[in-house]
Image 1: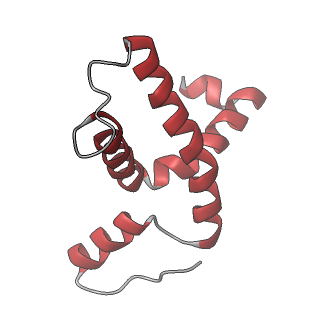
Image 2 (image 1 turned 90 degrees about the vertical axis):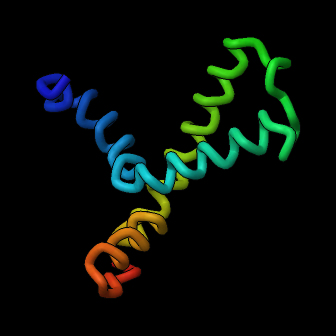
Length: 99
């Protein structure tokens, strides 16, 4: 995989995925929240009504929506919102919010 990322096509895909990877915790928590709202009684209650391929399609759709949002966010900020908060708590100082 690493060798493939050094090709033209691989570098393009890596550049597309990089912003989402830099704010992975934010994306993970937002995916979890969306799935709670979709599948549990706290939201639409779709558990057991969506076939496995439908669940996979929902997961891909959520991630596909997060890719451009992550790229937009990372153009303006150094860290994702949750990553920023984690750095603030871990380092006991306020990190820079914007680039």
